Image (cartoon, rainbow, N blue to C red):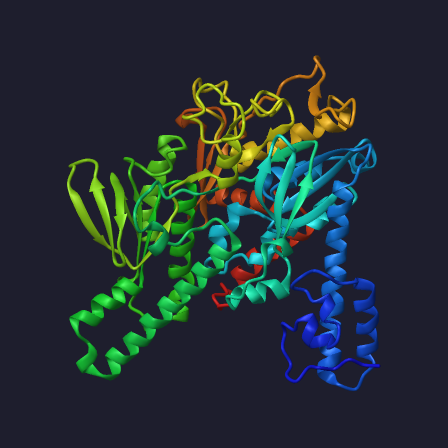
Length: 559
């Protein structure tokens, strides 16, 4: 017998609407027997009602997905002889850790579980290239399940809280399409439907960092960030709409002379302005990519827009951009921006407030307060600790200097101080002293995170690091062999794209003698960004993106 109670097709059909009498198995209260649901769904698929068939198919997929995840969670919490290592995050540290970890590690005395609300790894250095359509967004992401297969399990969920005493993670499922639709419509779903507890013996924190606003009022309301694929996509769509509005305004001003007013001219200039706050690598590369787009593609795609009205401004509180690099590279970047890229450099400007159309800045050279107009503001000033890091630090034993440190203070084997060896930290959330710069921690860069994660995985591979747990009642802790060499960071230099197919390379030898820049370094930069992808699939996709743009130009469509 087919159960058809559907009157209108909908992509978000509840169990009650799909399967009629089966209200005891609704998604909302999680009281269901998946076998019965799937059996009745198969029966419904044989009915003649197209709505019933579509809904039954959707529900079958939904319950199968839920059963898989519930099985993963159950297997992670059940009593086992294996020591449970749970890795939180899906960034550089996690991806490198999984790539370096041996496949047979998951079959030994340790089980690996990765938890993240994002089910993919994102190659962040090429995010600036995605906002102009130079590189496609899907070219720089790799599914986490491709990385974790044969090494452990993956759970798509957000970690809400960590209990270091009970060694439990409070997680919230994020994949459910039915609950997502309810949330979007403002309906209550019940927290018990989405949260679950995941136990661990050893926790590896690799949650990265979030964009820092430094407490400047108005940043969150009026500025655009560039930390995720969603940020890049939203910014690309926004800029495309602004350029379209400017083109339409120009056409009307030509067709109707009475609209060619000074007010409309000022409006067009504001629509065509992008101001980037932050003269670090991200800010510089955003300015370079936008300038390339304007000079190479916008003049062809928007011929009605006057090029002289398009403006890109780069703002920084320092006396030169790229302060993390050798001074000569910053000077060369400024010269290139002014002479070839038509990017305005605004130095010694500290932003103290952001309004809808104006930036409130302090001129550090003169001490004067300034009110600077802008069209679109991209905030690329730096990062701050993930909220989960702040919450967990408050529960651990306080360490000397904790107030000054932004992340977890770790030893040379990445054990978090105050955690009794049960918590490790990698990447941006780990604070380790830099032996070459006394008093300063290692920088929060992808290069540091990759080296840290590779080192940790190698210790587990060769048995130099083990999870020790003598009994079920005893808490597990990470033990390292006395002969194990501590981690040592090796700086390999830094590359930065400057636009006009040029780039700069800050070599690891130090000083201005170790700097290179020009077209050849630009080709080196493209080659490195291609080869540094985490999979052959990503490498090929990025490579063909470079070729496609050279042959056909950038794709600035909204999709």
